[in-house]
Image 1 (cartoon, rainbow, N blue to C red):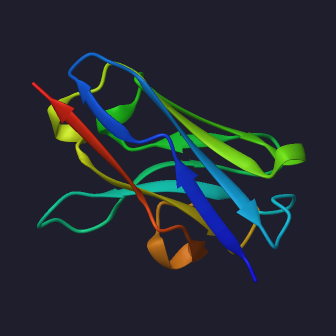
Image 2 (cartoon, rainbow, N blue to C red):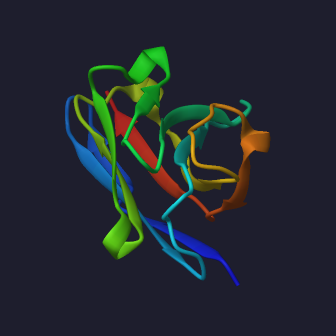
Length: 124
């Protein structure tokens, strides 16, 4: 059984940093892309960042470019999201997702497994 468990969320002030972690069990990360998505109250789940498995090629939604960094440690079966200079509009539940293939995608349908989410709240 594949499980994704996120951690690292919390309540911070604007301008602070957080690092989210996602540990995957039941399946190796090798050969699979990974992604982070978020969902704010009343909004649809949106792509935040993704990383391909082989060359580490990564992509971000425009609103987090230059502030967030996605990385992965295949040996630890873990993917991270370093979030810097957080803004109130970053407030959401953040979800880790495992892709169906090796290249990252912003599409929800391109991801096969999902974590339960971790809450990130940024106060102004």
